Image (cartoon, rainbow, N blue to C red; front, side):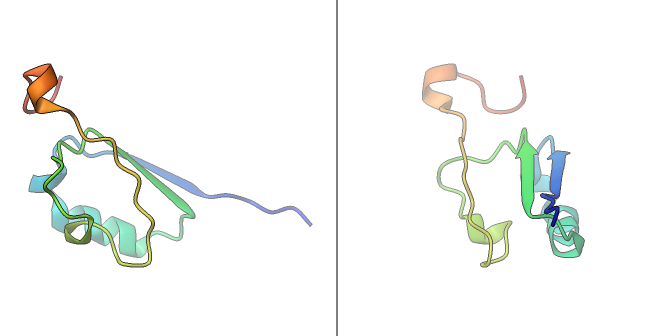
Length: 73
């Protein structure tokens, strides 16, 4: 039997401003794995604001103090 792994990739370019559209994509997706880049989330942002509770979320937020950049780039 062949098993498949369905991966959904989305470059969000600022998830905080697109949370409703992103959540709709997550809920409508039948993907096993969802990858999102350029979310521009910060460490104080709760996963619950953007992901359903049945998802295991792994994040690597930008260290604003180290990079001096707040958004993009």
